[in-house]
Image (cartoon, rainbow, N blue to C red):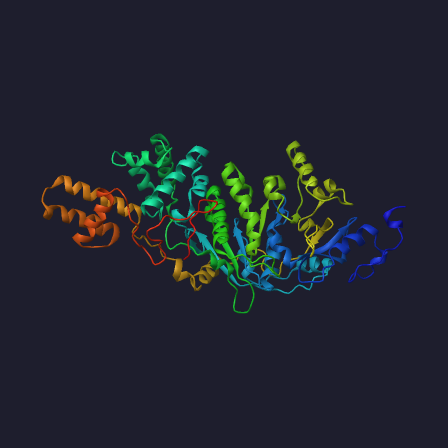
Amino acid sequence: MTDSEAPPAKAPEGVSGAPALPRPVLEIASGYAFTGPALDLGALLWDGRCLPDVQIRIPLPMLNRHGLVAGATGTGKTKTLQLIAEQLSAQGVPVFLADVKGDVSGISAPGQENDKVRTRAGEVRQEWTPAGFPCEFYALGGMGHGIPVRATITSFGPVLLSKVLQLNQTQEQSLGLIFHYADQKGLELVDLKDLRAVVTFLTSDEGKSELKGIGGLSTATAGVILRSLTAFEAQGMSAFFGEPEFDTSELSRVAGDGRGTVSVLELPAVQDKPQLFSTFLMWLLADLFHDLPEVGDVDKPKLVFFFDEAHLLFNDASKAFLDAITQTVRLIRSKGVGVFFVTQTPKDVPGDVLAQLGNRVQHALRAFTPDDQKALKSTVKTFPNSPYDLEEVLTALGTGEAVVTVLSEKGAPTPVAATRLRAPESLMGPVDPAALDRAVEQSPLYGRYAEAVDRESAYEKLTAREAGAAASSASSGPSASAPSSESASSRGRGRKGDDQDSSVVEQVVGSGVFKSLARSLGTQIGREITRSVFGTARRRR
């Protein structure tokens, strides 16, 4: 007996006319008949037909169980992110989106109705209404349209920085020792010139004794790190590190009307720096993990974080880096944060991370080459058993269609469902750059982060030490040495006074033990910084 000849089965609640449907369709429909709040993805595809009676959904409480949105270029991944982000915002959940191509900004503006939208809405039985959603726009280091997002070198940490600098495992461990030294000595690493100054000092004649005291750090390795830093800085990367440092709690804001704020990180200006922006995204996630309290299972996520171009994060990653990602993803769920990795195929994500992604939206894959065929077969193996021929379905899906499986309200995987996805209600494309700039400048956050600040930190302290030592050796009289020391101090720290300058010089030259000087109210004074799994600094702002 074929499926079409099978006796009628009891229809799931809410599925009209369902007894005429094949038994596998009824089973799929039952798997998505949730009673609680959920996001609507679209309608079931079966045997070449769209069945609007069978709606495919994701339970809202399960959005912190992480997910994967995958598919070949041009299959509709970005629109899927937009669709999910809209509904999360509407239900009061803040969202973070990385906009790599520059076409996500339209989520802030109402969509434009046209024949394609009307057709899609009719096919999936969607009541389509144009709507824009509350947004904040950010840009790494202020490169591009958006509020500048910066991190201090201290908080970024040695593991993430090693990924950016493309250091090997030995060099990564050595960089960790340098951070440890700077933390102990009160040398705040705010920007790249601070770290370069510390490494330069440690490789100098004066600093070699300090270098030996760190343990396991050779002069040659320190020299390699210094050259990598110099080259990195020469490529124009200084803008991404410094103050004011971005407070990641801004990503968890809710608008006045109760909708979740959609934070869009504009990345087109740094598309040619994939190592940088992918690692910065991981810093944002790690920083959230440090600061957010434990909440356990919640009715809805505190934040859903979409990690676009996820394969860039894992390419050439060290074991320590991969272990840190795995641990962060596993534990951040208890902080109420859901993470969706966005990439082309599941094989782009390490198995230990992939195993934690309970919600899957797989767009079409191509199978033009032997490598494509291998990737297709690997993808099929990652899905639960299904009545579909997934190899055939995944190569035949159209734009805006996907194979879906999510976690039910009880945490069990739902049946695999080929789905025709709904149309986003916001603008499916970028907003006008002038309008984007106006939105950025009118944001209450703009004044907080727009202007870079260069406070006293390691570079200024070591520069003052060098100037003080030079002045002492050049002149035997106190009246001659004071102006030189004061000049260096005034340029580096904006401070005046012979006693103050002498104090700083004595800290660096006299005892060899540096004491932390407050550069802001949030500075940690007189103790080593506690570092997390990524080596990022744990600090309260």
